[in-house]
Length: 237
Image (tube, rainbow, N blue to C red; front, top):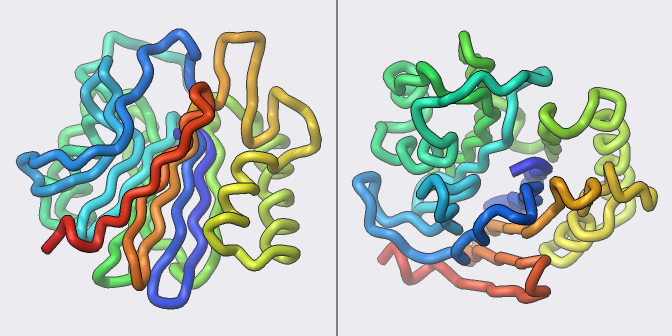
């Protein structure tokens, strides 16, 4: 939800997300298969809002970060959870249709990363509360996002440098990327990739979706120190 990386692979990609959240919030349900109006989807579910920050199907993988391109003050009550935006996406005919028709009135600002598996296309949709911006990004380039609601621009730039250093020194396989999301940083617990700020907000899980010869979703619950790994190829058949 608050730190996301996309790394292209031969015939696919690895997308990994660190969720930074209030540790007193209800624990998310681990990834499961849900039969929804948008088809068969696999995602960890937030029991409070009923949505998710990350989701995958046979055609698309989505990940949502809080905030757009600048810090914003909450001005709720909002119409519904941003986590429902992720699930609602799958009811539309792709990213252009969703961008043109989905009503974002009274939805809190967000950044949505949209990975189109079938077309090998990567998009970023940002909603700042009044306007939206859809950009097509370079599929063949690695990307990192950090939430503007938690990290000032200087720290975001520092994290981009950590990511560049990681890409230059490692093989960029599943384990290497997961380790970057677990241990990346300089020892500053407030700004490292696994972060904690006085018990008010902390990294509570890491979700990794890998697509290629196999389609995986891995979910690492940091509070339980437990990992689940599901192979999804047969789910879509």
